[in-house]
Picture 1 (tube, rainbow, N blue to C red):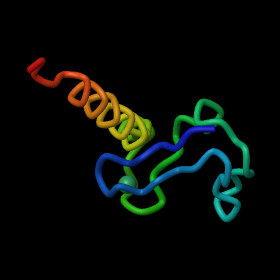
Picture 2: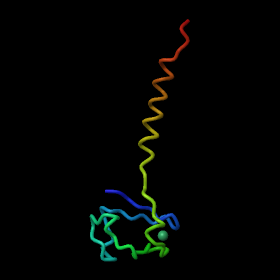
Picture 3: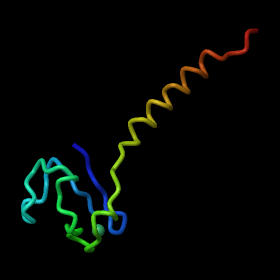
Picture 4: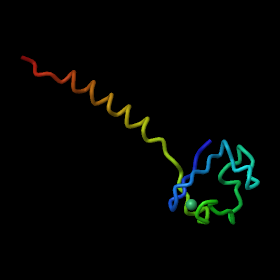
Amino acid sequence: MKQMVCSVCSYTYDEEKGIPEAGIAPGTKWEDIPDDWRCPWCGAGKEAFREKRTVVKHRRQHLLKNRTQKSSCRPWR
Ligand SMILES: [Zn+2]
């Protein structure tokens, strides 16, 4: 399940939740939404949406990696 974010108004479409009030059932894949569907907030088309990435998790792992590298890199005297 992924989330799509409107690049115009940052409205988020969640595949898990769908938009029941717009006739889109929970669990509807982004690809299965009609091409003439429009952002309920600003009216932008599907092409204005970008996939939401979970960057935070990756960044944290990267920080931990750096920390362990630093501690093993002591001067040898
Ligand atoms: Zn929008």
